Amino acid sequence: MIVVLTGAGISKESGMSTFRDSDGLWERERVEDVATPEGFARNPDKVINFYNGLRRRLPDVGPNPAHRALARLEQALPGKVLVITQNVDDLHERAGSRDLIHMHGELLKQRCSRCGEVMEISGDMDRADSCPSCGRAGILRPHIVWFGEMPLEMETIEEALVRCALFVSIGTSGTVYPAAGFSRLAKAAKAVTVELNLEPTAPEVFTDGRYGPAGSVVPAWVDELLAGRLGYRL
Ligand code: BV8
Image (cartoon, rainbow, N blue to C red; front, side, top):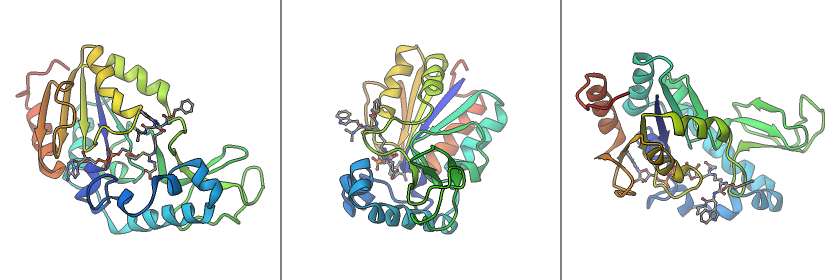
């Protein structure tokens, strides 16, 4: 079993912003204002506009060779590859990945704060809309995991981390927990841990690392893995 964790860096070459690079999202918006439940309670329209802005970018961006390489890996090893993404874009799906968990939610979904119903959304969110399930108006929110909220599918994720033989971290700064702790959990379970990133984030944790833009590093690494040139027991 191979578990892959991806972060904003894998989508950078597709044109999506990262968070903590010099031109990242958090340079423009305060985390407290747009990525916390308190910020949403304080000013829901500001938060909804922030995510409407990110969602509006999706039709103009597409998967890059890194997303496609991960889909190719899953097709070559059916049932043996799980991608856990911190990203809320749909680029992994559009590249063909199927066994995929969005642990921080999805831009293309909204949720009813009252009944919990999750529904697809492609255009702008409008808070005046009613929940199609419970009928109440004014209680819809982005289906995004904010700071202080529990990431999604954590049980499935933890099971995969203790079972995997190979853990690969791609395009993430390793800043946000619990995702930032996954490499250590996998290492403790005797998995080989590999980092594919622009720069090293935790050299003491990763068995191996390849550094450079994901669009070239990830396809090259996947090709070597599939050609059996990396010597990992899968
Ligand atoms: C929780 C959603 C508990 C919205 C996001 C003190 C210490 C430790 C932890 C905490 C603490 N205080 C609070 C916490 C917990 C907190 C946390 O970890 N805070 C950090 C900042 C200290 N975590 C939480 O609150 C989490 N929840 O803990 O719940 C709980 C328990 C019980 C019951 C209830 C609750 C929730 C975290 C989720 C927050 N939501 N986003 C949105 O996406 O807009 S987090 C946000 O950061 C994104 O999801 C993003 O994915 C994530 C991580 O960022 P990265 O993806 O790594 O992006 P970043 O810009 O940082 O880095 C990019 C990387 O790519 C860099 O390394 C760069 O070099 C590289 N790169 C750039 N270009 C390329 C590239 N690599 C390759 N190729 C390139 N071209």
